[in-house]
Image 1 (cartoon, each protein chain N blue to C red):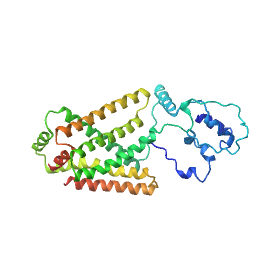
Image 2 (cartoon, each protein chain N blue to C red):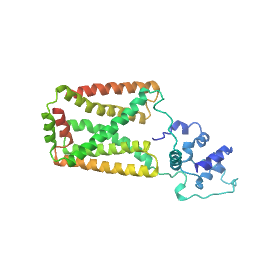
Image 3 (spheres, rainbow over the protein chains, first blue to last red):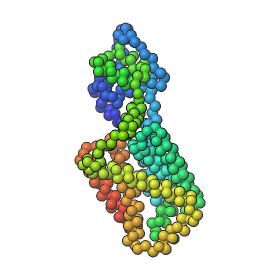
Length: 158
Length: 169
């Protein structure tokens, strides 16, 4: 779940309230230096390991979140397009989009309910295998059989 | 790093003063990460064999709660169905039309076929409409409680109507 930081909490009220919100403490903003010449009151200067350099966290989770939403919108658009213009291109696009959307969705379910380092690893590995097999099976069906669009049309005609 | 900052905040040190801005640029890892803390929590509970507090058995159910878990349920079910279809395509010897004819030859009544079509159409429409509602939330709109209920009922009604309409196609 993404933590949405509303812009109004950053503007208007200055930086002070920010430092008392634990969600932001991991990524602090740099306060402006007004008196550069004043000697530092604290003498202890601890040096960080590179990995903990303030402000330079990984954007992987945020990008993943955005990717999930973009894919959802893409999949939404594919529905009517596949209905009005069925084709092998739509078959394979649908196969890819459906598999990835499902993979990321089940991934979130596993993250919510599976706890413990090894269990998480096993669950995610199994999901990866399942998604790979699913995509392979759908592509096989598209290539050797009628394809997804035609299959749905045929199913509904009975 | 967060622990360091919180300790200072507790002692009344205001970090927005200029001379302290250097602190969080050079901070040593003094505590555990959130992930480590989470895992410790779960490990301790399993180790001590603690029973889980009643939650879904005692908390009053609400429409938003039910819609949320239905969204998850339909998602998992649809994903499972697609995976099952894909595995069947790889494993079963006959062609798709062959198996369709097999189902045809069972001569199931029109009502059961309509019911089956509704059974397929409903999870797809509900998950799609509620998905749009989720995207609406993602752009920050519709969080007021009356709005949550309004959009929720709209999704339910639209899903039923769409599924019935599609089942008649």
